[in-house]
Length: 358
Image 1: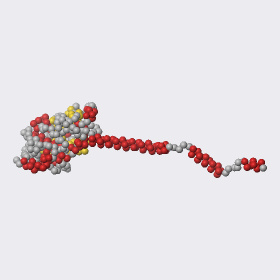
Image 2: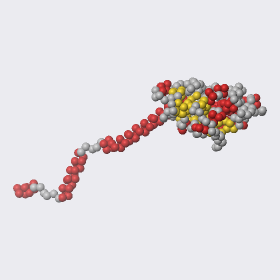
Image 3: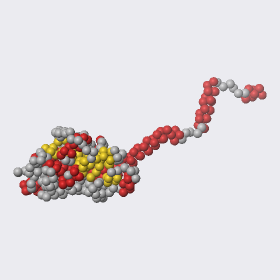
Image 4: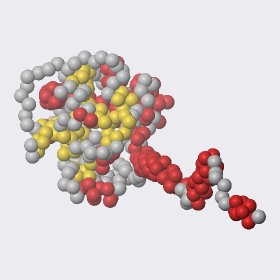
């Protein structure tokens, strides 16, 4: 009896299958007892990359919206920005009456001016005249100098520059005897092929001068509005009119200088950057990173000079005499982004220019 009991208590041999099952169960229990990785540990790499991408997108969005907001709501005249610029020792910036209380969103509407809508314009004849180091039409022909225009809230520089240059050239061609100032108002009010106070083309204005003629400011003063459009027939029947012979295009620094020296100011349409709106003196060079307006602004190029080894143009603007150097500006030669030397247009006014009807 005791032998049987002893045999029953002895362990029976186990099969290999049971041993394997036991080891498998032990390993499973061990895995369950181990700490499971957290969600962050499991997806840490993906979360970091995603967060970095979000920060980049948000930063870019913030920059773009701040830039958009600044161009839309920022004032043109910002005393802090002006002071910061002037501390750098570049050209001088300062406030002016023209852009007082303007925002950049207001200013963009006066820069819808173009040199031409035509495909081809005749070249101005070249000459071999010797170019002096400096020249200013207003100093050389003081009897022909006109008051600086204040164009107002009207994209009219295309007409002001074209008609004003015609007046200068007519005065020069008649040795100062022509003292009537021609009016830029009639092309603004009466020519339907331009866009009146919405902007226009310089050569289209000169086409009006060639075919219909210009009237004087004594007959039709500049108003910077389209108010005279209902009286155009009466204006052209009652006012003396002055025709030009033609117009031509001139390019390159030397050719533009010779054309001005020989015949008087030319018209250029320049690309406008926002820092130009507060120019006050010195030689203007575009500030790096300055925002630009979509289209252009017409100016009268009246001369050139050189200071501290820097060549510059002298332009006459239409933003009143509190802007720039009493309405003028010195612009560094060779700034391709301004497009001044690319093309300028010149009215051709012969000395025998006649009033219509003579």
